Length: 184
Picture 1 (cartoon, helix red, strand yellow):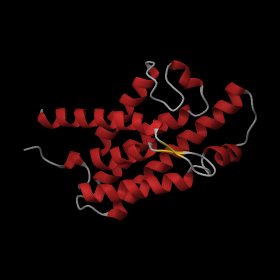
Picture 2 (tube, one colour):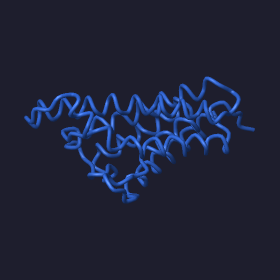
Picture 3 (cartoon, helix red, strand yellow):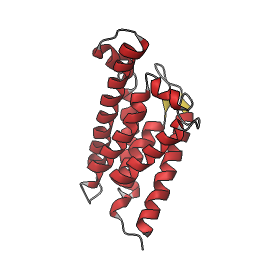
Picture 4 (tube, helix red, strand yellow):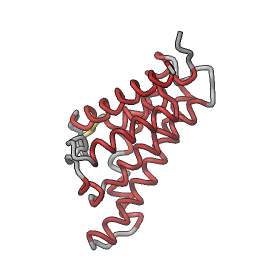
């Protein structure tokens, strides 16, 4: 019971951190860098698959209920935005990152980085696919999948790699998935 309560509290904290991360913008030459994805990866490596998924589902639910938690605000209309696939990808990325992170009991930077990269792959697959489908079928702008990849992934990839390295480094310092720890 105590472990479950702790996980719910930590998942809520990471949902809020993801919201805060959407408002932190670091200017870069091509695209501004936000910290949402950093907190998605960090949730995965620190909370494990279940807690990380819960944190991002809570984040998505808050946004769909109308709270201005997404980078572009909130509400059900967010589903129609070309970037909504990336928001859905947050949940998948957090879950997969946590799943890979849970596979090893001994903390290792390389293992946590691999977990973050697996999560990043999920994020980009869902995000770029959502972007492609939205632009072609909802917006009516014909774009190839390669074109969607060019605008939806390539500009963000360097920053997301830096975030993955940062999350892996922090996870090693903190100690990895909290789901593997016993509450005393």
